[in-house]
Amino acid sequence: MKDGSRPRVIPRYTPSDFADLWSPARRFAVWLDVEIAACEAMQEAGLVPPGTAAGIRGKALELDATRIDEIERETKHDVIAFLTHVEELAGIDARWLHRGMTSSDVLDTAFAILLRDAADLLVERCDRLLASLARRAREHAATPIMGRSHGVFAEPTTFGLVLAGHHAEMARARARLMTARREIAVGKIAGAVGTYAHLSPEIEKRALGALGLEAETVATQVVARDRHAAYFAALAIAAAGIERLATNVRHWQRSEVGEAEEAFTAGQKGSSAMPHKRNPILSENLCGLSRIVRAAVVPALEDVSLWHERDISHSSVERMIGPDATSTLAFMLERSAGLVDGLVVYAENMRKNLDRAAELYFSEAVLLALVEAGMPRQEAYVLVQRNAMAAWQGAGRFRALLGADEDVAAKLSDRKLTELFNLDHALAHVRAIIDRALA
Image 1 (tube, one colour):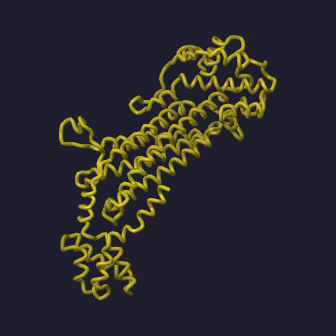
Image 2: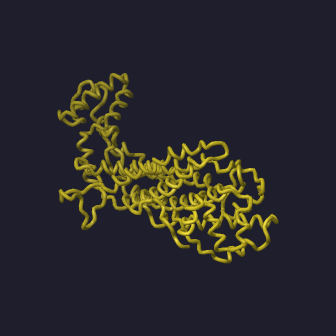
């Protein structure tokens, strides 16, 4: 097929298979597939002369996207332009194409095929990211790191468990993509306003079945757009999950944290002004691209409410968000898998940050022990907090301060305090959680 104008996707962020998927050449080829599948179904129903579809298919039409664009400039109608060009190439047999059909039969069915195929490519990339996260989670299952809430030291976890959490989130994102794929793989060959006035549900079922699609339950002149809204929402949630991972990497790479960083390759430059810089550019790029994918959700939702049996307000939106959102998410999935594979982990700095916490992360264990020893919870809380604040202000190590506190010593022996300050105990269930996440 001779190609015409390219889709509006940005080449920098568009994998080659998605550039092909959303190209005019692929779009018009799919339109022809839809028309021929419908023609074959009409043949079987006796509405079209036998051999018509095979005759058209056998001519191996070389569609010219540039020629279709030229015709459309006159007709102001893309499907009519397409059919006119097919008639130019196929001859008199092409008069049987589009019998009883309306433009949306072709457009919506073809769009369903493209979105379905895009979902398949996205799931493949999602699987690669999941494999990368699983490998690194197992690698660092026992690498302790400070857990943080509000950006502040909380209690210990392991780097492997943190990555397992991202794995679990992306596994849910993959499941949503599969659900969206099933829901979007729906077309219509039902004619104007969906009443099969010159067709039949049997013809539609046969044609769509040949294309690997189901029929819309109740079509108007279009496939219902709640399906598309759910699809783009699934893309957005996957992108948000990638952004959460990228945001964590950006934090770990901060100079004062230094727990992990993006791979810095030979010859790479971090700054045009400061030769020492090693910036988290991949993660920052992923955070930015996530905004693009999420931006498709509101227009997709607004497309749900079309006038009566249809209007055309959704068309311009979908020509933009279909290629942009799917291609961008594909790029993000590829980049994030590479990010995880190459992530440089500084376990020694993770240990240093644990030490910086001055053992404060055992505060809950001490609180619970005091409660179990008979002290009211709020009284115990005040007691633990005053020692924790003293440790935070540099008055000593938390364990030593607690041991010297007479009120604590009255409830907890020195041996008991030592038992409470046990990192292995705090992380005892980590491997089981990781196994559950990666099962």
